[in-house]
Image (cartoon, rainbow, N blue to C red; front, top):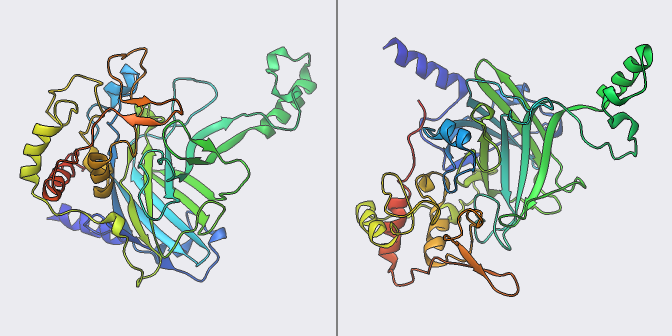
Length: 394
C-alpha cells in the first residue's frame, strides 16, 4: 500500500496522466518562450502527459554488439509538457536512463544519449515516421549529449586545428596554443535537418529552422528542452499539428536508426482546436486481423514469434504498432510504393531486393498493393498490426 501511495504521489508531482496521450495539450503563456529554460517556473504550471517510445526494429543494424545490447529492449515512457506563447512552442521531455553517456573525441566506439523532435511539413498526409517521404518532408531537431567536440571553424584558421604534438611550440607558447584550441571546442551538439525520405536527410545550416535545445542528466533521469517558432521557412504550425519524438541510449550503442521512437502525436495549441483526423485510430477486429496477417504478410515479413519469412526479406514488423499510425499502415497496405524503405546493403543481401528503380530513379516497392482486400479486412489487419509492440518498461 505504501508503494502505491508513493507512486501516486510521484505522478501527482510530475503532473502525469495514467493514460498515454493521444494529443498533447499546450499551456498558453504570456511570457516570451525564447528565454525559457529547463528550470523555468513556467513548467510547474504545465500539464504533464505521457508518450510511449518503442524500439525501432524495422531494420537491423550491421553491428552484432549493438544488436545484442538491444535485443531485449522494452518501450519507455516520455513525460512531456508543452507550452506556447502564440509565436513559439516549447517541449519539456523527461525519461529514465540508468547511465549518462557522452560522445567524446577520445573514442570512436562510445556513443551518446540524445533526443530528437520531428515535425511534418505536410498537412494532408502523414510523412513516414523515420525520415519523411517524397513530397512530405519533415524537420528534425536533434541534440546529442557530448563532451567537448571540435569541428572545422569555417574561418580559415587551420593553425589551431593541428594536433598539439605536431606543433613546434613549447612551455608558455604551447599552453597558450592549447588554451586557444580549447576555446574553439563545443560541448553543445544540436542540429536541425530536413528530410524527404531515406538517404535524403540534409543539415539546415542557414538558421532557417531556429531552435533552442538543452539537455540535463540528474539522478537517473534526462530532462530535455526544445523551443522553436511556430512559423519558419519550411513550417507553419497550426492550432493542431503532429509531432514525433525519439531518444537514443549511448550505453547500448544507439545511433542512427537504433533508437526508441514514438508514433505521430497530435499537439493542440488551443482547447477548441479540431483534432487531427490523420491521427485517428481504426476500429477493427484484431483477431481476424491476425488471421489475415498470417495469410497475406507472414511469407515476407517477420513479426513477434512469427518467423516464416527468411531474415532480411522485408521490414520486420515486430514493433510496428508502437511507432506507426493507422493511416500510415493503411497506406502501406494499399499503396506500398508511397513510402519505400531501402532495405539492406545488396552487396551483403543480394537476394532480397526491397524495391526496383526505373531510368529516372523512381522507386517501386517489390511488395504488391493489396487492393483486393475490402475496407473491413484492411481495418482488421491494421487493428492487429497496432498490437505488435513490446511491453512498456516498468
